[in-house]
Image (cartoon, rainbow, N blue to C red; front, side, top):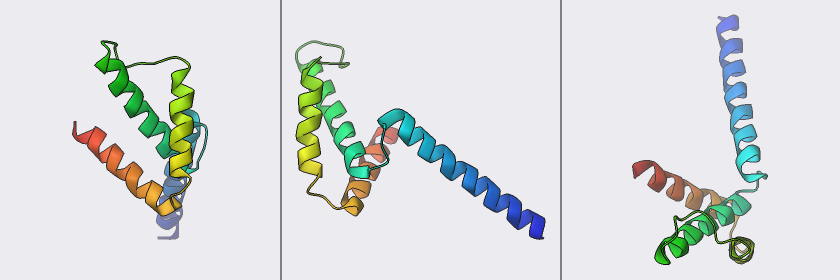
Length: 96
């Protein structure tokens, strides 16, 4: 019985470490508000690029300006609000 609990805790810890590693690898941070700013800026860049006939990938130097603007906006949110909004964005992406 003890072995089963220990293995379960070990697996949960591995999943948690994997999620942290994935967030660091993709976003370079664990701050949910910075991750939210990155996600919102990506969506905006895709929309603007597609509006002007691009493939939705990048706008060059404008990318950093848009992300900086979203960081300013998301800095006013609590971590809980950022996590909620990230959850909404990711659920929307998964449902597409």
